[in-house]
Structures are given as structure tokens and as C-alpha cells.
Image 1 (cartoon, rainbow, N blue to C red):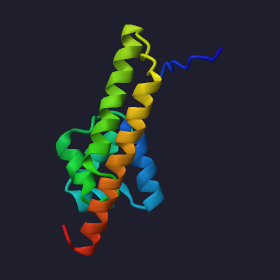
Image 2 (cartoon, rainbow, N blue to C red):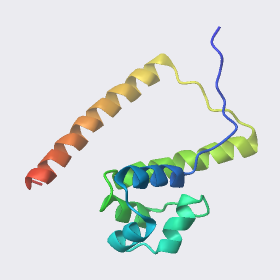
Image 3 (spheres, rainbow, N blue to C red):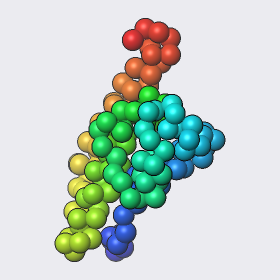
Image 4 (cartoon, rainbow, N blue to C red):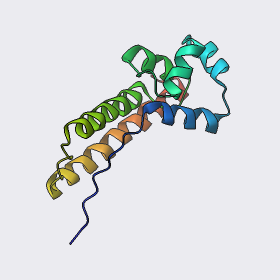
Length: 125
């Protein structure tokens, strides 16, 4: 019988932002200058004190390799996890068919994203 995993924690999107900044060797000051987001706001996001909204996500997209939807999805998943913890409601188990659909959708969307990204680099889009 499989063990069901129901974490009692949520990871703020700022954790992922910090990791991406570290991997790109970009400072908070530099990110602030390049995105037009204040250094204070970036610091608050990194420390989990501020959420990532659509405007911030779009500004991050302009400098980092992750698109705006990635940041918004992280924020949404974080918010959902916090609500589930607060309410004591575990995540529903996905059925096998849902998993296949999700995998297909991810694969399809990834191909579109990489195609768009390649065209952007080539100057086509």
C-alpha cells in the first residue's frame, strides 16, 4: 500500500526567485535595476513577506528565464497549500487519467513554449 504524502508546509515563490537569482549570479540590486521593481519589494518577496502579483511576474519575465505564468503558478500553488494547511484539507489524489492528461498538456505546452522561445531568439516572433 502506497504512503500518502500530505505536506504540512508551503514553499513561498520567493524561495524559487532566490534560487534563480543565485544560479544566474544576479544581486537584488541588479534585479531591481533591470526590472524596475524596488529592491525593497524584491527583498520582501525573497523573504516570503510579499506575494508575486501579475505586474511583478511580468517584470521578472523580462529579465529571468521563467515566464510570468511560472511565477503566478508558484504563487497560486503556495496560496492553495496555505489554505489547505489552515483548513486541514489534504490535496485530492489525482486519478491515473488526470495524470496522463496533465503530462500530455505539459508536454504540448512545453513544445509551444520552446518553439516560441526559439522564434523569439531568432527574431521571428
